[in-house]
Length: 372
Image (cartoon, rainbow, N blue to C red):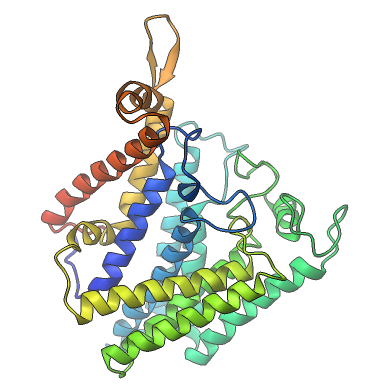
């Protein structure tokens, strides 16, 4: 059990809302019935579901500043901080591998990367960049990574494809995945990974945008001035990302630089509103459910993946002898008769979020905050 430190309430609320959204879009009653905004864009473009992952990486970046700045100011040796960063990154990466393989663990084909693995890698590199230099250094890396990514995507001649191609499975990011991750990619795509290696570069930039925002929030500016600059920076980034999208399509699957900039701007803007209304104006009555998710974010996300995997593995034998998974059974017999196919799928996801809230509420009331 770890005592809860002094925290930025708006950041916990933002983190909790993001995790709740992540669980919501990850667990419909049926993948055949998903509203457009609750499903990822098929390729170019973005939906509500596509804002969630970059939001979380952005939040990781903000948290890096708050966590390490206090330790540095208290005189903690940087060597100890590097060790902490590496250990935490390895733990998060290992949890991701555990969830990818559960319950069969076929290491000949296990998916190596994934959501938690990308979080681990981005946390690792963003933390190292934070610890090795100041704000200008961190800003420089956030930009350099975007343009390194774009340069190779645009100009490297992929064998059999050519340069500057951004089609599904036919681009430089997919080419890198095929060289390094062959046989260990997402089962749905097989030939490329939506959390692949090359697309992790701009994802690190997304995290660094959070780091830069963390510096702004910890600055000596007044709270209103901080809010104003977050809104200015956020809207400017969204504008730049949208314009850049004319040359480099906004695309979550390969995490294009334009996508990273646009979503980073959207994240800054959303945090600005949370910061203003929660931390400045003091509107806190509605925040508790999101805080409950936010203080145990990685824990509840991992639990949600594990439990839905169980629901998809365990079968129920029907009267006619056929078998159906527990998730499909609950969806067909409980939610569809009441809400219909499409709304029943959403209702299933909402109930799933509520169940995890209740589990996390128990931990919250017992003051158990699992620091992974």
